[in-house]
Image (tube, rainbow, N blue to C red; front, side, top):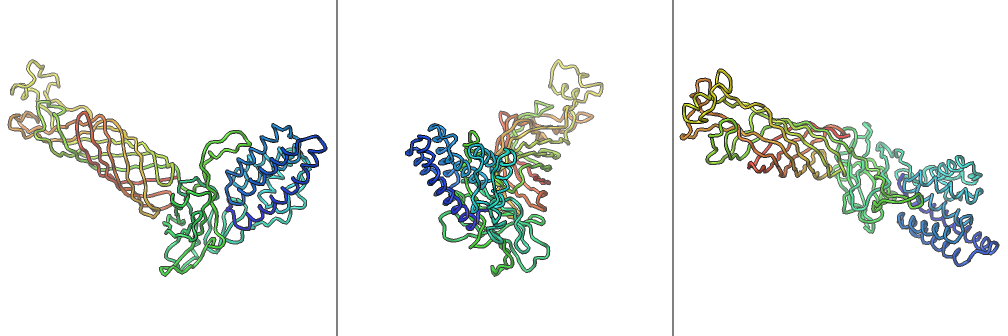
Length: 501
C-alpha cells in the first residue's frame, strides 16, 4: 500500500520509542559486560540518522545506515547485544515498507535470535508489519509478543490514501486502484484504475501527480483500455526519492465526480536508484518495481512494399535496371513480431518479414541463346520446354527492433530503429531496347524479373498503436530500410493486430 502521512507519522513515533528503549538498554548492557560505550553511542547515532532518513522517505539511505550499524555491531562483538536486535527490527520495518517482505522477515528472525523477547512497539504495529513479525516469530519458534500491538489501524492512511504498504486494491467510491508503492528514479510509473459501470457524469479520468519538492499537483489524462484507465507519471517527476499521486474522475469543466486519493491524502511511490544488492542485510534494489503494465508483445501484420532498385535481373542477368528507380515488392508480405517491454515506453522485439513474390515471367533459354546470350549452355538445362524460372517465390528477412512509444492515450504513436538481414525482391519489367524480349512460352515477351536487395538492412520506422482492450490493439506503421551491398532504399506499409500481456 502507499505510504500515507498518517502511516509515516506512526512509523516515526514508533521508531523514536524503539530508539529510546535502545538508548536505555544499550548503556546498561555495555557497562555490565565491559563493552565500549562509545561504540554503543555510535550505533545509536546511526539508528537516529536512519530514522531521519526514514522520516524523509529516503528508504535507501535508511537501509544503508542500518547496514552500517549492523556491521559495527558485528565488528565490536555486539552480536548478542539488544541494540543489534533493535537495529534488525528497524531494518525489517524499512524492508517491509519498501515491499521486500521476505528480507524483512529474515531481519525479524535475526532480531528474535539475538533477543527472543523483543517486541514490535505498539506504534509500529500496523497489520502488515505485525503479520510479518508473527510469521518470523512462529517460524523461529521465538517468544516475540505482539499482545500490546493489537490497536494498529487496519487502514491508517484513511480512505483513498492507502496505508502501510499492502498491494491489495484500494476502493474509493466507484474507482478501484491497486497502489503502486515502489518505482525507479528516472523511470516513468504506470498507474491503472478500474471504474465501476455505475459511475456516470464524467468525461475523463485524470492522474494527478506531484514531484518531490513541488508545491502543486499536475494532471494528465488517462487513456481508456477496456474497463480500465491507464496513465503514467512521467520521468520528469521521478528524479527524487518519492512522488505522490491520486486519481480523479472529472467533467469537461474539471469538476470532480469521484476520486481515489486526494491532494491532502495522496498515494506515495518510493523511488530507488535500482542498483543491485548483496546479502540479506544489504537488501537488493534490483527487484522490478510494481509497474502495472504488460511486458510481453505479440504482433502479426501484413502489407506491401516498394523500393529504389538497382542491379541486374535475378533470372536473366543480362537485364540491368537502367536507370535506377522505384519498383514494387510484389505481391505482399507478412510480418510476425515478438517483443518485450522494458518500460511502458520502450520495447525490444524481433520482427520477421516474409515476402511472397508473383508476376515474374519465365526465361526462354532457347530464345535467349538465339539472341547471343549464354553461349555454350545446354538449351535443355531448364527442362524440355526450355523455360527457366526463379526457384523460390519467397523472400525472408529478420529484424531486431527498438521501439519508443509516446503518450499514454488510447492511440499511441511510436518510432523505431531496425537492424537485420535477409533478402527483399523487387519486381521489375525490363523494357531496355538493347535487350530483346526473350521471355515467355514463345520467347517473345518482355522479361519481368526480380532484383535482389540486401542482405544487410538498417533503418527507422514509425506508426501508431490503437488499444481496443487492455491486451489487444491494432497497429499501422511505415518501415524504411537501406539495404547493402545490393543497394536499395525500401519502404513497407503494414497494418495488423497486436496483443500485450
